[in-house]
Image (cartoon, rainbow, N blue to C red):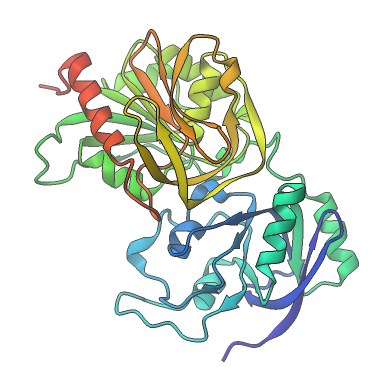
Length: 372
């Protein structure tokens, strides 16, 4: 039986929401972070364990969360890096033959706080109108929560990658039975998801290295291609990465996703900007400017590449149809491309999964794609 404790959420502008505490209760009696919303209908476990949510409190717009429990097979990282979750209705029981535990127990074990009973429709509309902002929730009094919210810096000008990248290199072997799995790929880990590694391992063996790995060390693996992973926070704060990526351009084929896309942009001199409330969900329409096809995509980012700052160094390959944001680019004079959305999904549709095959084919064209 879960003990019900009254709790509240207070945003930095003083907006108050009342609810009940779920999951872990920290000693401070509150949790703070930047409040964002995710519109996916399923996949709450994958969302919670996505390292790209470091520093953020996730609001789920789908009202009923927890009904199919938590499965050990569905983690996107070793643990959650988000600050907390906000939900409307917590399922009283979970029912799924794959589940290993319920979401409340999972949150307690992971030391992640949650708040339920919140009017998430009202909260989402407020964020859409005024933009994502810091907030704090918990069992502390309203004054304490407001002070914590005002003290919270948010995700701008903060290197959150340092919280999520691996400490040491590790190797993910190629998937057995794949027809084209003898390539060497080096993945710069800015907060990489396990589903991405599953896709890459169908192409070849993947050497995952920390975000600050030098050019010399990356090339020492003699890779057929370099992958720039997803990750959290402000790309402008990851000052060590663009210089490394810039030195890799022209040396080896490159494919970037999400933060990797933004860092590739900064490596060629483009600017990145913070969006009002970002893209977080599994139903964003994106137009492929090469084929003309519309893809429904999974998204999770607060920042974007400023298309007007590409200055002819890259062509735009994908555009978000909701707001016109640059969703993909291909460098003009180098074998490198990237997308803002998540072709691996997890959760979400698989319309864009072909991009991993394009990376495979790019490596084949450039260097034969295989090591002796």
